[in-house]
Length: 294
Length: 159
Ligand SMILES: [Fe+2]
Ligand SMILES: [Fe+2]
Image (cartoon, each protein chain N blue to C red):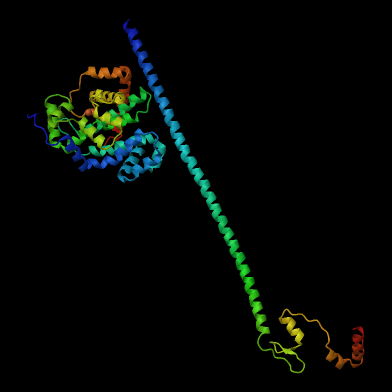
């Protein structure tokens, strides 16, 4: 196998391709909702305005809001009602998840990779990162949810815009266990972290989120003030891969690194185990209700 | 440390963790509940304020409408009165202008029903003029010759 064969598409070229592709259609809503998530002082008016211009999205959100997963006693027939009955934080998460899920439609599962698995992984990391913030740090963790959901956005960009190269690099991982970043770098010259961070910069994502996407496999590279946040994403990503919520046959980094970050955050293993169990239960419910479908 | 002792210690750690986690969840949920409640109250009070504002606006407009109707009625009535007065005045003007058929001998005037009336009766009916009766010197000499001479003498003496 020719491992040295690199693509002609540079990172800058790939980011230009994104702007011209259907991926760009989520830009407005996603950038908008991300800035609403990171700014707690937003008015409900902004939120309603953001989604009312997107009727298919509104319909999906209402379907989710009325699903038995959120089990409200009342039928929710518009966004204003959803805001009252399920709350603006949850509503923002649903909006982000529903809009992001548009990127994971279609595609055929190959070489141990599938878009649905990648989506499932993203959701799992989002839920775990948020749960760690809530249960351990006693904070809402809305940004952790967003970062979890977006952290591997570079992967879906490669899958959609460089399908041949992407299939080759996934195939290579199946043949020789290695990290995804390693395989990407040998085939493309860059990895999904760089692609994601480039996109985050171009689309004006909040700084914390940009670091969360760009350094989730290398938290030490993140800005000092975001390092704890990025380490949480790293831990959530690692643990969900271990728990079977991965999407490629990946070779995980040494467990020592994980141990170190867990220690850095002052987390205890039995506390983490309890949270992981909780998230698995939640994911089970979500899958059972079909909420995961893209 | 015996096995059962370390088991017990582990179990205690686990329970302590659970308590801490649930404590955090409870606090966050309480905060979220308060946030939602305040948001709900905001919406509620906003709507209530809107309702009372709209009610006031409606009342004000209603009041204006009633006033307008009153005003309209009043001017209608005034207009009618004015018209009536004008019509009456015009009738009077009509009666006292133009040709009055008058008897060349007794000076009676024929009215619109063809009846001959004393001139003072006719004029007082069709105008604002009032009559006060006296007698002129020519008529007094003609009607009362014996008193007339005496009257003239007295008037001269007084002067
Ligand atoms: Fe990743
Ligand atoms: Fe990941």
